[in-house]
Length: 133
Image (tube, rainbow, N blue to C red; front, side, top):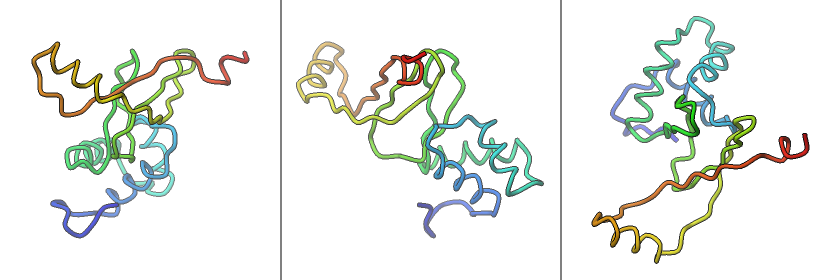
């Protein structure tokens, strides 16, 4: 939740954008967020929504995700460590929590020479709706 110590001013437009991202369960794109915000803030422009998303992501209030092959940014208000699963048929995205064993991150560090600070895991498959079609 945005608090009083944030390093930017919380305008009504920014609050509306943040609220839409918080209420979303579908990891919306900037265009989808714009359409939802426009319903309650009719005068808002796409550029304002886009700048606000960049500002919130830069201050780690939301996550900007690049999932799948379409390379369209999607947004997530859940900033806690978690992974995602993406339907390769319809593009649906869901949060998932499947922690890797510590031995896996140690092996990645050994093989790469990197100090592993974290990871992002993305599962690909078909959602229940697409499987039954």
